[in-house]
Length: 205
View 1 (cartoon, rainbow, N blue to C red):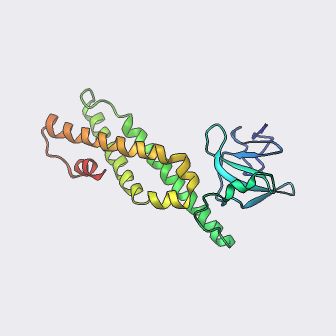
View 2 (view 1 turned 120 degrees about the horizontal axis):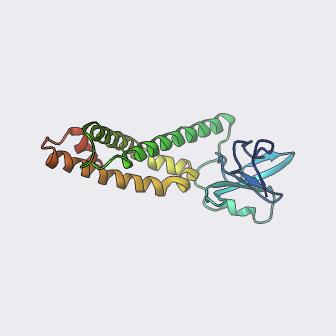
């Protein structure tokens, strides 16, 4: 299969920065993703390619395209859940929504990683300890905000659900445990009243 690169752009998304997208005469595995509904098509060099699903490639997250009319393409008809955009404006709105939620997820994961990599409370210096608590507060705030919208995100953007749901669920549970650790440390080791922010962390999830 061909791979995307500087002199070989992905036929579906134009990706050139790496070799993540691959394709041959029977399928395109696009790792940029797409907002198309299964069954909708794109045109590549004068030929129509139908979007099938977001479960392709080694990662299981690549957008899969096959030549329109290819035998077996009826697989996209299974599990249709949301209406197809009928106008360019509706498609643009859907694409904008996906990009925005994708950014929200990226920021959530980044905040989680910072909190997860905080030093051990017992060996941390005072400034490190403060930074650790701040990072947990930030991760929890993002977790609470994200949780309110997860059902909408997963329903409207099944590709994001397929790629991120398991990781999101793991992060939410881990943040709850980190929050409880922070609460107990502050209350029992530092001898300080439980701050509102830390209590919110412990009770929020």
